[in-house]
Image: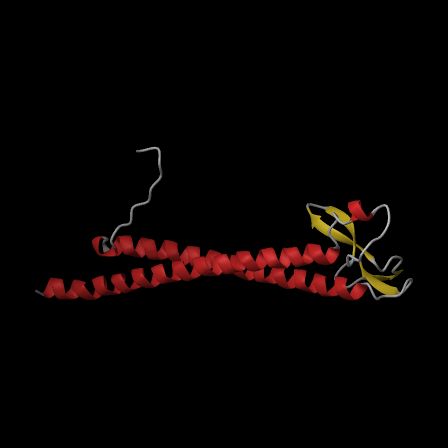
Length: 169
């Protein structure tokens, strides 16, 4: 084999019905997996959009507002919001970062250093945008795989219909 990995296409007409069935099965599995991933990405995007909405409305919350803090899906404790302009953002693998809800203009000594820190809103807007790009890319891949699957199914159908005619002649 050469050092480069070039894929060469094989005409579907050259494959046997058994080979086409195997290709169809593989494409079915790939489309199913990609569709599941697509749904998971959409669900994640919805969660990030919900977080973004909450962060944008959180800034107007008064200090010491009483809230219910979930401990489990059905168990809550009373709590108070101590800093309504700040939130803890789960950045993955068990790490949390404190961020301001919305970046406002800053004056004074710290303005240069603070401008480099993303607000929670900017963080979630970035996540939503990244996921939108991934969803668009994945949608194109799914459409391509589905098109390939339909082509394989069509050729397989033609081969199966042609078999009885060949045996009767």
